[in-house]
Amino acid sequence: MKFSASAVALVAAAGFANAAPLVVERQAPAITDADILNYALTLEHLENTFYRTGLQNFTQQQFADAGFDEKFYNNLKTIAFDEQVHVDFLTAGLQEAGATPVKECTYAFPVDSVKAFVLVSSVLEGVGVSAYLGAAADIMSKEYLTAAGSILAIEARHTSYIRSSLDISPFPQPFDVPLSINQVFTLAAQFIKECPADNPALPVKAFPTLTLDPTTAMPIKAGSTVKVLTPGYLLKPADGTSPIYGAFITLTGPIFVDTKAVDGGFELTIPEGVNGQSYVVLTGCKDKVSDDTVAAGPAIIEITN
Image 1 (cartoon, rainbow, N blue to C red):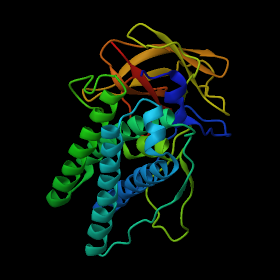
Image 2 (cartoon, one colour):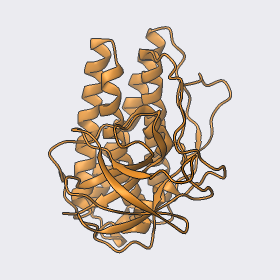
Image 3 (tube, helix red, strand yellow):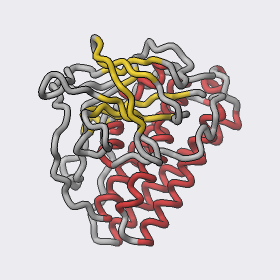
């Protein structure tokens, strides 16, 4: 079973209706370890609810009918257990630190079949790895950093197992991709319908949605031309003429590519140096990628070289 563009696009089903400026200067609020733990808890609540409801909605027989055997089904139950433990662990840690833990939100998952459930599971686990990796540099407490590293290792095992079960490379590149808190929240927010009013406010902001065109031919490789969509808004430079770049995020720094404005979004060419579950943002800056320079995204693109 391989990824399809429409499957990857499942994680970007929601669009933003407002026009997006190309570069917005944002004053970054001070972020504390409690903020980071609550950010992690927000993601763990999402994953925990995803697995809990998915395993409630689909029976073992339905998994078997979709080509997933009893061993896979039982391992999914183990993954679901892990996510619940992560929720309990982070909640207890926040309470012990005198902070208020966020509660579970209401979510909308674009899942109507076992296959869609497993595909979205793979994407969510990959985002989880990038979330913990990206947040690590902001954690001040060594104890919290060690705990986050332990969870990261488990999330990486989850994503490798699920990718292997989908017959795609379980470890497609030598480095995982770190994403900023706002980049991850942009992806997570597309599943969140509503959160409890008394949840602590987090210093996060979602960028405008960017998604791979679901009609894109697969597999996508270096040199492939793809279209990324800007649903519900028009992205253009403030001066009307400056270029908009695609920036593929990697551990060793962004890889910039030129884009071409087309109806509904932008075309760009996949560069060398990215593989597996990859992330691209749109930006007007070719020097760096930061929360001050991201105009839209990230979009998730599964690349198979």
